[in-house]
Length: 116
Length: 112
Figure 1 (cartoon, helix red, strand yellow):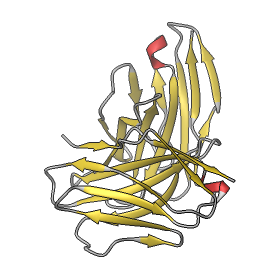
Figure 2 (spheres, chains in turn blue, brown):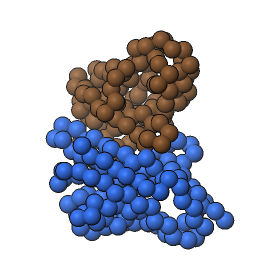
Figure 3 (tube, one colour):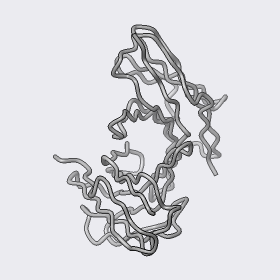
Figure 4 (cartoon, helix red, strand yellow):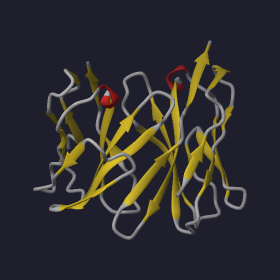
């Protein structure tokens, strides 16, 4: 079984500041993928960033970057220059590819509030 | 492309009623999945399909049925709704097993 843990239920950051959301996971697989999804009040699940476990280089997407520590099974998300539009729930997810399907396991989420 | 679409957006049922949540995608994705989202629990996999005619159970399949007669559609059926099935339901699709899953807008279901 695989698990994903997000230990920060809520976080707050001021506009233009940097914030880091934590995620740890557990899996016995060697080939897996990690994701951060954003869920704004509209409820839509939006992909923020993706990391392949076999890649050592940390993924980056504009203001979003990850710190992937495979040995420690840690996958944190850093948001730089926070904007009001970043206010949302953020979910960390682990995808295990079984050969026939990709199954996602989600964490319980971190609610991020960006303030003026 | 419309992406992944779900209908209805909201639904209220009485205990024991049945209904079907619709999901369709126009991206020619082979893999489709259904998740439910409950407060404080993240999203959990209900059922998934790796192609037309092939379905399998996820983490929380009890009380739900699925079928996949075409690549585009993957409906989720509640045979006899229970209050424990009150949740937000998401459909997702992906091109291949290692690709990113794309989510529909969700259906908020309330069972009284």
